[in-house]
Structures are given as C-alpha cells and as structure tokens.
Image 1 (tube, rainbow, N blue to C red):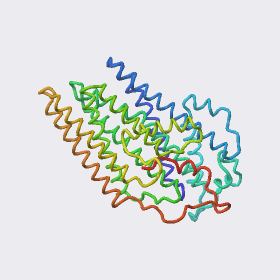
Image 2: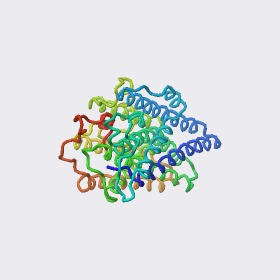
Image 3: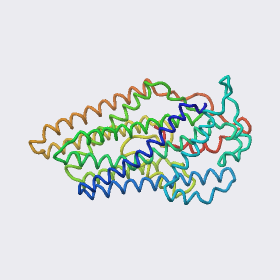
Length: 390
C-alpha cells in the first residue's frame, strides 16, 4: 500500500473542505441572527462549538496515547493548541508534510519506490515506533484514517443537527427559495460522502481488509447512505413541524438506545474510561442517523433490526403527520415530501441490498499481516482496529 499523488491531492481537498465548512458554519449562524431567528443562530453556533470541542478532545488524547506507546513525551504546547481548536490543522499540517515527501520526493527516476531517508531515524516521525517508521506509507495512511474519523465525528455531531434546523426552517417558512433547497441537498451529500470517504480510508488502514476499489461499489454505497439519510431527515422534519418536543423525545430515545447498544458491544476504543464513555456517547449519536458496526463483527441481524425499526418509525411519523391534516394550501407540498420520504427509503434499502450482495469487499481469508521483525501489530493499528466499521 502506497501513499500516492492522488491521495495527496485528496488530502489537500480535505483541508480546503474543512476550512470552507468552518466559514459556512459562521455564515449560516450570522444569517440566522440577521433574520431575527436568534434561537436557530444560537443552536447552530452551539452545535458547532460542541462538535469542535469533542473532536479536539479525541485528537489530543490520540496524540497523547501515540507518544506514550513510543515512550516519548509529547510537546508541552499540544494541549494549548487543541484548546485553541488547532488540533485538526496540526494533524493536517504534519500529514501534508509527510504525504508530500512520500508522494513527490520518494521515487527514483524509473518510477520504483525507494526507502525515504526520513525513516533512517524514527525521531523524524516523533510519534512513530521503529516498526512503524519502516513502513512510512502505511503510517501516513493510518494518520489520514485518524483525520477521516475525526471529520466523521464532526460532521455527524455538527452538520446533522444543523441540517435538521435548516429543514425545520425551510418547511415552516412561507417562502421556499432555491438556495435553501440547494443548501439542504449539499448538506445531505456532504454527510453521505464523508461516510464513504471514511469507509475507504478505514479499509486502506487495515491490512487484512480488502479495499473498496472501483467506482461502482463506491457509488452504490454512496447512494445507499444518501437515500436513507434523506428519508430520515425529512421524516424527522415532518415530526418537528407537528411537535418540537415529540421530535426531541424521539431523538433522545434513539440516542440512549444507541449508547446502550455500544455499551452492550463492550467497545474498547479508548484507553481512558472517561474517553470511552464519551466515545460511546458519540457512537449513540451517530446511530440516530445511520447504522455502523461498532465492533467490526458480523451484524446482519442488528442491521436488519435497525432498518426495520427505521421503517416502522418513519411509517409512524407519516401516519401521525397526516392525521394532523396540514393546511389546504400546503397539502400538495407535503404530498411531494411524503412521496420523497417513501421513495428515498425504498431506494436506500435497495442500494443497501445491492451493495452487500454484489459489491461489498469480501473479507480476506488470510491471516492478519504482522510486523516481520517481532510478529506484533504496529501500535497505531491497535486503535484503528477498534474504529467504527460501516
């Protein structure tokens, strides 16, 4: 597995999207305040700050754990950097440096890879052991997976609640502008793509997993996530129109159910007990919106149960909504919304079945690839193995 020029370009695109996302969050909050919708503005900014704080906590703890595993003392300014929301930028900076070196400077004229000089001394990679420094390409791929997971946390903790706020504002408003529709569609696509990107990065970082190669598997997986997301967000939006309290109660029940499921699976993602509790809370929040395999085990039955429950809840919301008949002038609009909800859910399940029956990479029958020197899994891979599995 090599870190290529294409991977580097995708990494650059990732940091640009991250910066654009921060600017967009500020712009949306300011727009709500300018319209006099102060509650929406405060909620949008609150979700942004909470998500950023949680992501920085995980980033700092991962740095701390990585330094401890290599027997080194981390930089004293690391905590300060993360307190000022610089952890993600720091990670991007170091990965861009290492990735550029591997992608553009570590090839001979004949195109064959050569061992980069920076691996001659593990201190050039301050958080790496000698075993990991022997394979710098895999190390950078692992670090990209770290970033991908942090972005996954952020987009579910931040973008998902903000999308529900935008949907509620859109459905409640008498005016439906094209810019609002475009913003909602782009948000759904961004959440779906972040999930696919994480899925791809995770499989690259695990040596015993086959890659999600080719355009068709990625497209089918993207459509499965996109359609199921769309159906669910619109359903919650309809319930919120009926009663905000009912919507909040439903989401809290689903969140607690997700946390219970993560606890039942006895996840072992974090070394710290407090961070493991926080991790399970984040997992529970993600499970509100989509299914993830929290242990990397066979989850055919849990996934089936999850989407059967999703179908029943969606059906219940539609029945309750149409029992409370909307005003005549809006009935045609909500008929279209109902059709989209049903069609999107059915298409999402269809693409899910197609993906898992035709395109899902078969798990390798080979034994896990261990380090050739002392048959130990590299330290960084231990954490990666406990990541959420799509």
